[in-house]
Length: 167
Length: 167
DNA sequence: GTTGTTGCAAATTTTTTGCACCCAC
DNA sequence: GTGGGTGCAAAAAATTTGCAACAAC
Image 1 (spheres, chains in turn yellow, brown, orange, blue):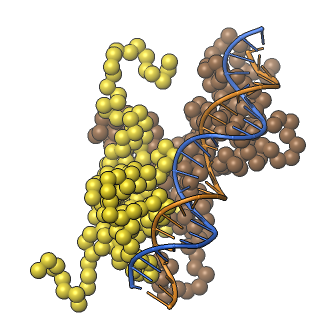
Image 2 (cartoon, rainbow over the protein chains, first blue to last red):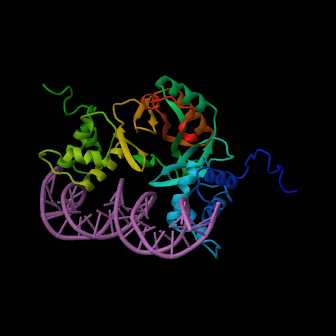
Image 3 (cartoon, each protein chain N blue to C red):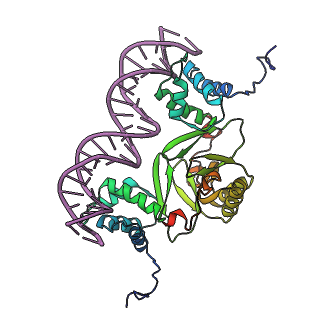
């Protein structure tokens, strides 16, 4: 027996693929080989990525399914709508990350090496609600990025008499 | 006497234009009519704007200075570097706001009407430092946007039995 | 068989760049 | 006068779209 639930029971989807397929079905959209390939590629590893990187991963080697650039873009939008991906814009391109089966978090962004580090704190939720209430807003989400320089990038190579940005 | 300080005293700039000119001089860049026109147009009103809107404002009517699109983009970058403007990306385009002589704040963004509302709280600074310290980050700034639906957009036209996103 | 989906090529949108002429210093 | 700045046109980069062929239901 490979499944825990029989067909007549209420199905609680556990994998991103399942959840995406439910989303598609609920909208009368089709489960295609391309969409399957994209979701599986995305959730095969937990990293931040952009459309171009994903396309590269889908096209490298001999894949059984061909996926084009427009389809990648279209499917990324669908996955975002389905609540499986979160999008943010960094340096002019859209960067995605998993937003399913993964705790809510925010980011530290190193302006020097581009590294994106996740952090989590419960303080943001409270703040979010407080602010929203004060303005009569109904919150659907938030995005917070702290910009700066990460530890390894701020290790000085040589002793400097003045910081870089004053030169 | 129109100035409070003599030429030999340390100058404390008060207007955005002055500050930008100091920035330019410190970099060996020139104070041109175009750059002047752009700064003055931007700081003549306190609103969020994007490159296209600004260009429109600079070109409408009979202006004494002609400013082209590339110059607008180049100057916006300079103003950001000078610390006079803050940039954020919303809906695929860069949106700017004043970042000089104006208190630090963040935004509520209405996903329905696109309205951008400023809010301020001292809680974010503390949070920022706390998180940064924990990760060995040197913070240079942050950006926080709360997404949702504003009060006027969430006023129901008719009584609905189910929320929109379930249809 | 219908109707949504895909790939292709082309279009769009936003922003940047090369370069000859121009002007601030 | 000299070197940075500007406008123009063109390029670049990211993303979207029209459409005919295709495939999921």
